[in-house]
Image (cartoon, rainbow, N blue to C red; front, side):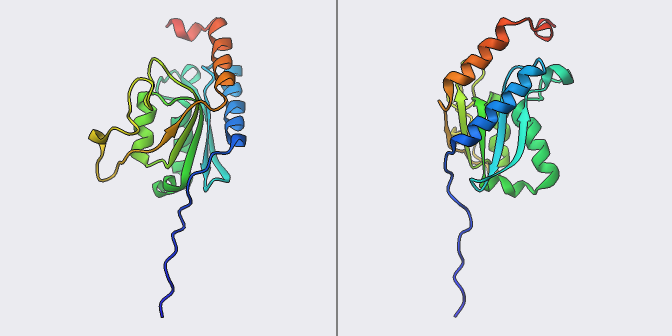
Amino acid sequence: MFPQHTNTIKMSKYDSNFMREALVVAQEAYENLEVPVGCVFVLNNDTIIARGRNKPNESYNATRHAEIEAIDIILNEHDRSVFRNVDLYVTVEPCVMCASALRQIGIRHVYFGCGNDKFGGNGSVFNINTDARLDTNQSKGYPSEGGYFHEEAILMLRKFYIRENKHGEL
């Protein structure tokens, strides 16, 4: 008799400790004069495999969002297939660019703090994460939930925007 194949893919499960860690990373962005967005990518509900924070101001590259920074780290160390077992915890809803990147890499689940009323790609403005018109052989949608540590994420953004941001004037 052949052994039965067991599915090693775990279901996503929210853990507030990972959102707290994303807030720590967002604080690092704030301290480096960046919009305070931070994220962590978590493998199998228990291991952080990458942290990312916004770096557009210091890099002079508007595409260097927290999610993109962390995705680059992961792809340097893992095969793209790892994302099937990875959840993202991010302090602010992914923008359209990041939501699309997350869809293309096949992220398992996204948990975010506050919505992104101007550029949100996971429900606030667009539904990049679930729009069936975007399905391809390589890309299917992903579930996304917001509102985790919402107040903390909002307060961090407010704190940033009340101080002078010289890069924002360019």
